[in-house]
Image (cartoon, rainbow, N blue to C red; front, side):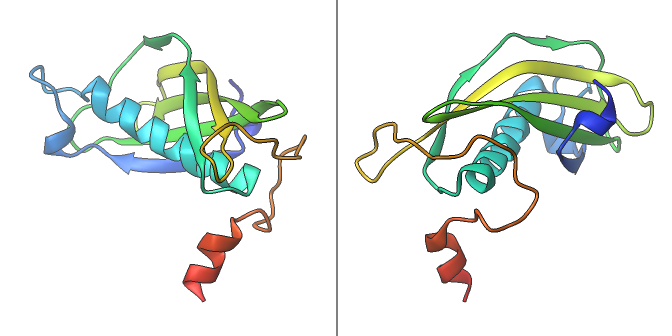
Length: 141
């Protein structure tokens, strides 16, 4: 993936609690981070705090990170469905510049007040913050 394609970026510092028995980044920690960042991205893009993970495609680890490394996670929206948002994720090691993994397809579903899939009404990415859910925005004021 060309970094110019990434529309959302966050960084994490690999700490002792993130390591596996081999002393490298535990895949479960990384997947938790990806899911959390994808959820935040979906909430902002869909304007609803009730967006949930529906699907995550095959995950292929191609390199790793060690204690003290910094990693960068990038997400980009690839499709808007009637009730869903599909995105692609890439994670890389900032120090080595190597890709750690890619997830070609992560699907989030927009939920209504009844907890069932609901239309969100969007078909394009926003770079503004005007889609932050009203409930969340009002809680900050």
